[in-house]
Image (cartoon, rainbow, N blue to C red; front, side, top):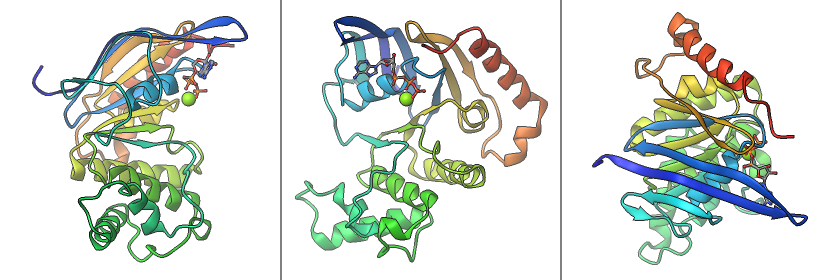
Length: 258
Ligand SMILES: Nc1ncnc2c1ncn2[C@@H]1O[C@H](COP(=O)(O)OP(=O)(O)OP(=O)(O)O)[C@@H](O)[C@H]1O
Ligand SMILES: [Mg+2]
């Protein structure tokens, strides 16, 4: 158990909406190890975002256990960085200020140190030279790079990403996948990546958890034993297709929540 980063056991989450109870998550158990890249995949409404929000400490679960680096999760914390589909940058701040904003409450760092850190992480995501651009002056892919830099700037042990590339065009999406793999290998953090794109999950991950809806639970766990560092043409191999087949077969047996 020494190298376990996130341990989830029988996590249940229910919502009450219009006096009706919705069981969003039923007995969800999964493990993420240190430096592991894990994807959570499943039909719309199966509870992927709900689970990610629980791990982020943005919402509370009903029963079960969620433990990060040996400590129960009780709220949000700087040991987790979060990237959502919408870039959610502050439009009136420069790129570097958006990144440094995440360090706002950190009194141990001076302004110049925060600026230096922001520049370092912008460089890591390939945005050297764009530090003084406003979000509106950047493309969607560039804005998402800023959001990734902002999530990494306080060196979280677990990076949580909820369909981070869902709003990007196919070409930019592929570039961002490769960038993310580079950044992840550099930072040596663990990643929990939510997506509904089967190719993306297989290409990026060490392990894929497939969720089923009604109620949301883990239907399948699949280790992805493809070589690292990953090259794009691994997607043309038979092994890659086999992984996809296993996942798609599982998804086809589990319709989306209506
Ligand atoms: N705040 C809420 N109040 C009531 N029900 C909610 C709330 N948040 C989520 N749900 C319900 O919980 C279930 C899971 O939703 P969730 O957003 O986690 O799904 P998802 O897998 O992320 O879907 P998608 O792929 O469309 O993003 C859905 O039935 C949803 O309607
Ligand atoms: Mg979602």
